[in-house]
Image 1: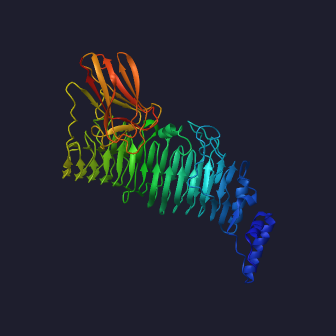
Image 2: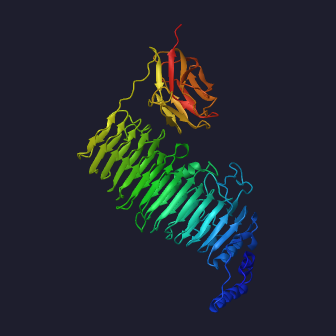
Image 3: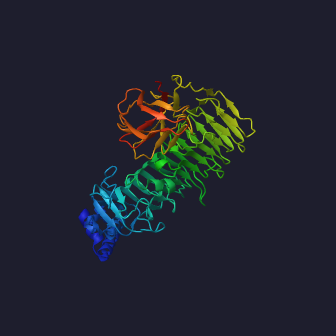
Length: 591
């Protein structure tokens, strides 16, 4: 028998159901007499089933017709040409069916500042209108066993900011072997749900977007799941960043038996990775090159929270990078091992501690480094361990001038060996156990650089009331800075401020200088504002700190200051580039 063309396949599947039934009957009859059945089509074009892709016509029914067309043949692809496809309802992808779009990696042509927040098409885009206001409603897309999404973008034109509107999950899996590849979810309220129903052996490779409340949920994965190259970033709009930093979770992982995650990243979420336990029990996960960045505007965020994990396998991060107000929280409910190998933990100016640990499971840090923790809470340790077991080996505590590790009551065993504590021996044992502590290298801080007699020196390493930081500041170590690194902030609108408050011994005239380090990446401001309050009021000086090849004291003028703490020097990020707040000196001027 002659091989059927794809066009004939479309006709059979999209005509009247009578034609479909007759076609199926013909296939059965041919098999019964020993003949060869016609091959099913490899795929169909959604536009041949009535989809317009103009952003105005509701294309929901056309998509369902096209998917049914390949579904009745046992599976295939539904091709989606570039365009904007309005979906007023929801899409149910049959088993063995793939929605295949035109992929632009990643699709980012969205307006950021004014409605409708959407630019002309640049790939295959689904415009999601269904389910507005109902977080528990039917997902936009439901995948079944062996069904997949490949090369599409999803955008919610009616989404709101700065407080988002609830919508159902954008994508939900219901069956094993669901797959997502090269998909962008621009502004969903909830991203991907592979946990409400069993979804074992799921595969994700290339998932981008800005889920506003929940990113990826995994549970009931009773066979190995794989998640690779996930990037949750503010693609759509930064004005909802603060809301997400106060409410959002990027990765929620429950029961997963051997979940492998690779190259996953998120920024501006209240919680980066949350390992939970529902009725199905906890999971075990290996995460390689996965990280979580801090929240918007210094909002309190936690990159990793562990409620529980499986006792025989647990959770293992390798080559991870984390920034937040608290880096890792392991809760008293945890019973399994949690391991961090070759990971970096960065604090912000309002960061408290890198790890707060509890539970019956053990926690291991091996070959990790810690920097800029406890800048706002100097009495809080970098690692606070009340978990039953703690191992810290070959780690570098880079700027911890307070307690690096505190062993709390409840800890039954601790091994702290071969670490580098750069600013002194700060290991405190409150537990009463005989902890194994040895071969740690302690390094006293270098002396502060000398200045001339009578000079009042304020460095960014000092604390209140002399130096106060407001907003989000980071610390860059060494490299031509005045002492032990420098604070820096990204350009903004004055939301990040550094206040240097000298104690003036007697009223008089003083020359004011500020130290600024080099500009190796050519991203420093040419107009950093420095406000000086003196007896004459407040004067703002704009300083060009761009293209400096070495650290330099820059004179900001001569002012008359009253005795005491009434005067101040303030640096802010209301500038056209990144700004620095390193050191200030006030030098008396003698007649």
